[in-house]
Image 1 (cartoon, helix red, strand yellow):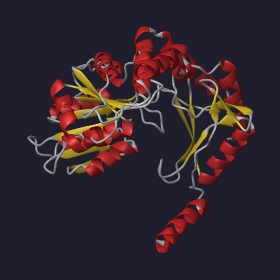
Image 2 (image 1 turned 180 degrees about the vertical axis):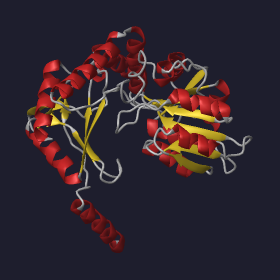
Image 3 (image 1 turned 90 degrees about the vertical axis):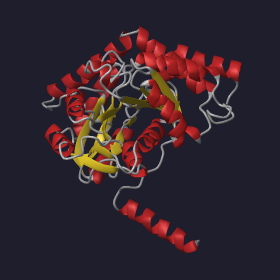
Image 4 (image 1 turned 180 degrees about the horizontal axis):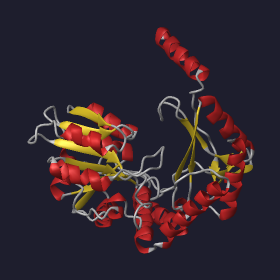
Length: 384
């Protein structure tokens, strides 16, 4: 045992030396954009709470009501005893929201990706994946028995060159994030759908950072007007939907297959009633109130204008703002100086991003005020 502990200690020391060591930041949330740490108020600029719904009174009320009516936990996996009535309501609402026949809720977006990819492919199949896809997609590919082929980021020529050399009759699954979490750019889903049709491939898109953001909030398929043309839509309940969990939406037969084959679904205790109820309420708010997404994009445009006024050329299409500074040390230094100004902003380093691509990741919320954004961008620009 001691030999193993020494090995782990050596690795921890190496991470410190390379300025790659990470640890959680503990704080008390007091609003959608403010937190308390050491009894002082900080502005949160690192959260994926894109629409600020974590503190929306109707969302909180729905969670409290669910606890009072259904209790605090599910008590078992979905296929044993954990499928309380709220699951059926949420899965129906998600299917309608994503314009699909059916949907299935997983415990996290990570588990949705891992479970879906590994269930849908076998050793005779091919997975074709964007090089900057999320770790959960990468791990799903690793767990699958299929052969995984990587295409250059958003490079449709490279994707087509891979597809044209694969057997037409074999199962081929093209997997991509719709909004890339560390760069904020959008996958060319319309071109991917065209190539998939041309080469007889399935399409799978992870809308983790697009649900509640792209289109009128329904995600990338709505954004590109591809309803009925994308086979598998994944998403998370933990970002714009302000709760916890993940989901898959698609054809009825796909969902029935995953219920019986996706191990991360089958062998996990189900989410709590509060998780499901808060997701349902957030989904309803997005579907029925375009002002939430409109406010988010007003803030995105405002931040872009602030950068341009300071002669920084940046083209923002989503709430994710990457400021690439290359070195780990510089990213940490800037994040620390912003922290001293009571701003929490993430310093992103490998392995989350490639070597020499360390960055500050700014996440804009509909709940940020123009005063908040002025303050953050002014302080950030001073340090670049």
